[in-house]
Image (cartoon, rainbow, N blue to C red):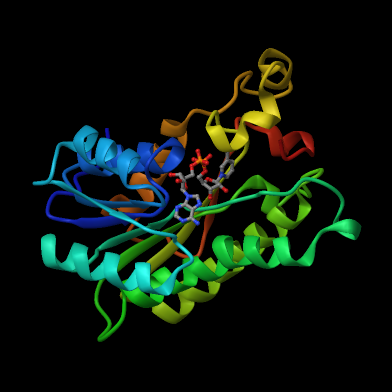
Length: 250
Ligand SMILES: NC(=O)c1ccc[n+]([C@@H]2O[C@H](COP(=O)([O-])OP(=O)(O)OC[C@H]3O[C@@H](n4cnc5c(N)ncnc54)[C@H](O)[C@@H]3O)[C@@H](O)[C@H]2O)c1
């Protein structure tokens, strides 16, 4: 059972589906009021309704990497529910596949902007002003720890996000705890190419003999967001069915 988050205010980015929506659902079930963001308004409206409607959830559409969207989302959640206690930087993209030596640097900049700089931007915006208590959880990936074939630059940005997590943990202590989670393959739209049509074969390579589901990650995020994790900061929790123990990342 997730520890109570009653009275807490959370913002989860990229939360109209997949892992972000599962995290928002867990946080809301634990009693938090939750702001969800993503690019398109319609899926966000559906998410708000799933989460329990406007008394407990708010959707703000925009791009995570747009500073104006970050400011207006934070202002909206503060006006609706109060200052943010829990920030989950869930948005992550990987629009390219192939070797680093032929990686288009324009695409690389975009991935870096969304996966790393926007996470820092959200922290700066959500925790602007005088220091106050809070929690940040960043969505990394085992690809940030074991080089992921074909999507190496994505892994580079996640490795950087894990170090950003450590650096923020030191700079924002003792008020704000900052941690990350690093999943292996979780069944979402984002990861479809990694398992579609061969799920049994991929799952068989995992010591725990299955792929992840969004709630596997959400449970860990809810724990890190709660007071049960009050003495944990700067860490990355690997959620991978044991796959990194085999030397592989996905
Ligand atoms: N699924 C996996 O196997 C897996 C494994 C490791 C890490 N992750 C990480 O988990 C996070 C969530 O992944 P997912 O699998 O749920 O992805 P997903 O593609 O299913 O969902 C991504 C969400 O982010 C939103 N989004 C994408 N780009 C955005 C942008 N620029 N601005 C605002 N919103 C944006 C989408 O609308 C959607 O709501 C990502 O950071 C990803 O890197 C996923």
